[in-house]
Image (cartoon, rainbow, N blue to C red):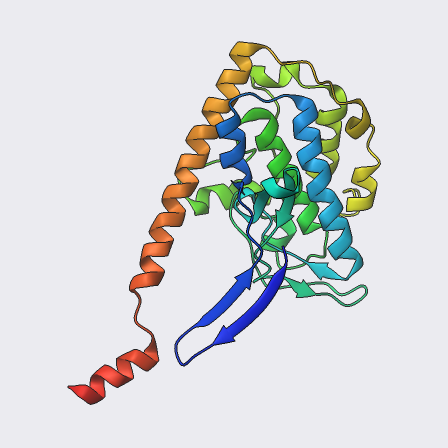
Length: 250
């Protein structure tokens, strides 16, 4: 996503970016109301192309998730990745140690404090898993339970929804959600997967599609609630500087 200008005053930063009128990825899918595997492949391919580009620049995003993928309707629904606040420029062969990310999408090796750019591939794998099933591969009642499951790295495709998903799509997810980082695909390798050319464009079983979209709606609503809560907390926190000013006044 393009950044045009940055202004500052005593209290705030003002960041001027391009406008993506489509909003967040999941919101656009839910508005559309129908969905097939070909469309999921288009989404995953665009995300991986962006990831491949910034990995070539030695940049690791570290917080890839649907909320950080926007749809630009004025550019033929082109997807834009945003929010590089936790990203880092990584040196050749350097291992990163600081834990950044969001519980549903974070890679196991990040939680263990020893990782590289392939943590982003894991996150894209989780996004694709959710796109095709409406559910995250690792779920729980709170962040602690979710991250405990992520650390183990054990997930399944046992739901009936997966019966209608092509073998190429399932194989790609397995290669992206591989706990063994050495065996996990790079972004460039993932883009060579035959699924991107061969993904079926026929509509899936209507009942299963409705179930998947319902799952996605419920999952998305939970995420929105968490975002709203965090936003409220941030907006109502008083900075140390403001506390100091108030102390002087009183």
